[in-house]
Length: 373
Image 1 (tube, rainbow, N blue to C red):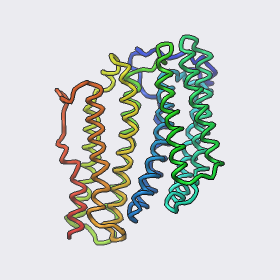
Image 2 (cartoon, one colour; image 1 turned 135 degrees about the vertical axis):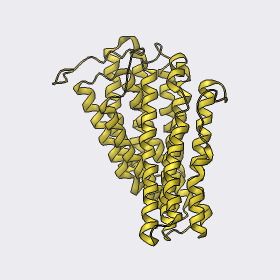
Image 3 (cartoon, one colour; image 1 turned 30 degrees about the horizontal axis):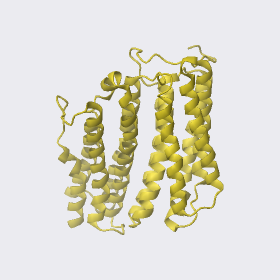
Image 4 (cartoon, helix red, strand yellow; image 1 turned 90 degrees about the vertical axis):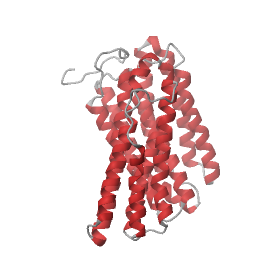
């Protein structure tokens, strides 16, 4: 590519390209999404530590889905059509700005859900629309430059556009939380249906199996940094309050071991190698990752709650605190087993290494021991 990064045709990448890997721009893109995940984690933790379970679950679910789905759509588009020209780079920048706007909209969004009034989703949805406008522009450009897969690209653009009309209407509609949730569910259904239909046309888009597997694994790894960050908060809270102790060491080791065990478990799945031969299995694998992302972000939120608890400032008891960590870890393990079984059509791990999953419970036990001290 020349220094000017002049405009180039989005004619589609070779799905069998050798040594295809993530680009520096994709990694920078992922970092902005982790900022969004962090915003969701922080707001969820604030409600959990006060025992506001319903509001926390609602805000968490909607927030994680919005951020995850926007990332998923871009990741697949880039895997098939990233030509690294100036248009693609600027469109990516716009998407990055959009997710940061979503992050800024999380506090009022969670607060309005907690208060039970009209859902204040204006900022969050505005950021989402910014991102999706850039995505539509890229899909339309790909449709023009890649006649072989034009119908697939136009289907993507059409479904995203229809959903965006609904999201914009939702900004101005003064609806109660219950009705808003149903509307969001319907619009999410439209979003999820788009790729399923698009990839049935013209043989689908030319995405790269090893590249897309690497993209997902990198986002999971970066998001696990939120778990590490939660462990650091827990350590700081205890040390600032009572200094170093055996419990602090358990917390320090437990939080790190938890993140490490989750990382190890995740990489037992040979996704790239399977997707090379079974491209149709990509949908279940991809959509299942939304739950994976949610479980990792939820674990980070739980560690934030644990940090508040062991500092003596929480409004919930030890059992509830432990559950905020144990539940997302359990969901993480369950969805990984489900994805593994779906990809390989077996639950047998075969030759792939398995860590002792009991290590994923070290941090909850450490919190429980601290509580009883």
